[in-house]
Image (cartoon, rainbow, N blue to C red; front, top):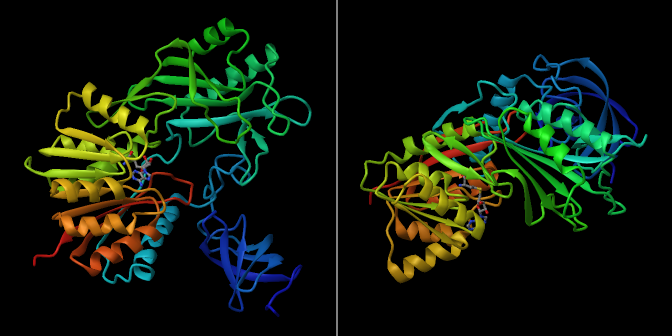
Amino acid sequence: METVVKKNDLVEITIEDIGSDGEGIGKYQGYTLFVKDTTVGDRAIVKVIKTGKTYGFARLMELVKPSEYRVEPRCPIASKCGGCQLQHMDYAKQLEYKENKVRNCLTRIGGFCDIPMEPICGMEEPYYYRNKSQFPVGKRRDGGVAIGFYAGRTHSIIDTERCYIGAEVNTDILRFMRSFIEQYHIEPYEEETHQGLLRHILTRVGYRTGEVMVCLVVNGRDIPHKEELIKGLREIPGMKSICLNVNQSKTNVILGETIVPLWGESYITDYIGDIAYRISPLSFYQVNPVQTKKLYDIALLYADLHGDEVVWDLYCGIGTISLFLAQKAKMVYGVEIIPQAIEDAKRNAQINNIRNAEFFVGAAEEVLPAKYQEENIHADVIVVDPPRKGCAQSLLDTILKMAPKKVIYVSCDPATLARDLKYLCEKDYELTKVRAVDQFSHSVHVETIILLQRLEA
Ligand code: SAH
């Protein structure tokens, strides 16, 4: 089929949107082109590299007129690294883009008009916010050690000394680890040959407590020169836990199942609001604690609890939202599919002396319908926080039957959110509040929290 452009054509376009990997999207005579390294508002000459029936890909050749929203990325490897996609875009514009993404999904997929959107909740400091980082270790072409990040969609490591969205202490940790590896000839792991020892450096930092954990992922069960390793790492302020994670599998899954403690505690502690959480190397924990606190405060506000409500928190992870809401509810029940996460949730309830929270292991779409059928359970508020694919329809059907006054939906994918809301709002619910929250500045991801209220019969 003939397309308006063919391979190697040079055309001039204006970038009007951003794709899911942060690439610019523009149209030439109605034909859509995806162009890496461009941003909304750029006027550019691009070279077509691949064409399909309805869209194609092109490379940036010349910026005829740079977008007014373009900024110089702080990080020198921002355009190569797979971690950040939007660093070259002004932060205020990033927020506007994310808010629009949510609004568009709700309009186009959800069929909503008059969307009750509250202004997006952005970050005050959109750098150095992540409390967890995983740096792959490998060999450079010249034989030296490479520690850094994977280039977008590949496994080649870009050597770096600093990550501008990770905790600042990582820079000290990386500097020490680089000199340790070089001095004692620690062999970096090689994916192709499955040889070598050190695979990843995992760090976790308690944002409030300042506690630091370093966990080295090794293709073995031990590491040479442990004493020197521990001595050096202990000089880093806040160091609380040093351990190994054993991963001897030929896999690109980062962590194995076994932890070998080397020094200190096997966990660090951090707080969201007044609730303490124990975080071990394998635990799931929200990566942006400052924005998570804001997200949960919004959940609390939307739930409007007075002390006599029963809340179900589905997809509860380690019980973070459950415990937060338990401060104001009569009883909270959490459901989560991963057994270890439920163990963490129970222990977190204990260390905070929270007695009005109970947790169940299992798929939300199985546990809730079964409990409803067998025990006729009741809920005043149901919270869901599903993974990207959203909620199973059988779960939505049970929610409709249980008829809670309020449903709070926390979502990391506005498209599946819109699909599920459409289903609930065709029946007995009304969309009363929508708020996007930026949990991941410089990435294309956006978190949304919404409130549905049951229509009076
Ligand atoms: N609410 C938590 C975690 C949300 S992430 C927090 O705020 O920290 C989504 C969670 O859903 C993950 O912990 C994942 O393990 C869990 N999950 C995935 N599929 C599930 C299912 N079908 N039923 C219950 N939990 C599920």
